[in-house]
Image (cartoon, rainbow over all chains, first blue to last red; front, top):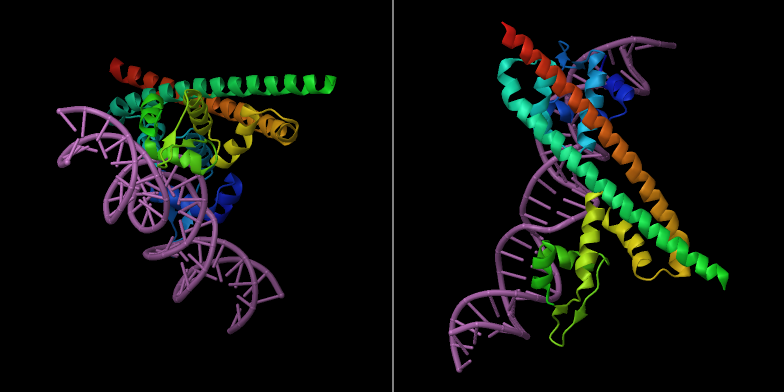
Length: 122
Length: 122
DNA sequence: CTTGCCTCTGACGTCGACGTCAGGTTTTAG
DNA sequence: CTAAAACCTGACGTCGACGTCAGAGGCAAG
């Protein structure tokens, strides 16, 4: 599969895929002419990368987590496990914060709705 | 209260407060010499602004929501209510996505932990 | 064999939420 | 009264995840 096909299957841009490789998040096999070729599992990998991005995790941090996905060896597991616990906890805290914000928005909407009702009475 | 005091009470920088005013998220009363002065409720307002920022909402969108906080009138409520519903739904979807990412991380950690146990056996 | 699409490598542009610096005024503490 | 600290208005710098453009080469179809 060439880069355009991978882009189509994942929904991310060609530029983004090259950027991921540049950041060490993705590897590719090059044809003699230098064109990138990918296997089907790269599709899932990009989906996972996107998940982590939308979770607010930076390229650098993702690069520290992903080796643990591919080859869970002794070297990477010590530091990476800690890293994952950290990011997991950060995510948990962030989710809680978002829920509080959502609740605040809900209360705000409720107040506004009440106000409109009192207007409708008149 | 002057801008430095407000910054201290909210934990955001003086620069950020000026930026919020520039974006129309915050107003201030000016002293004859031009210095900004604030009331105590501005502290809560900044806290709310921060909540919305960390929820991934942009200045422009926040500016469209905040009038609804201050003065729920007829003019702003029609468009702003829709805007709030939209952002609330976006938030709900985002929270769900983050929870899926968190679950994925948990599974990953579980796999890695299992792997380390099989290592420990040998 | 050529035409048109895909791909390559730089390299500069963008956008949002500020940080930071310059150069000047104002307020406060001693 | 003076010096330090806080404040003011521009205006340029930053950082991350790409978008976009230039210029050149690669590949399948007619």
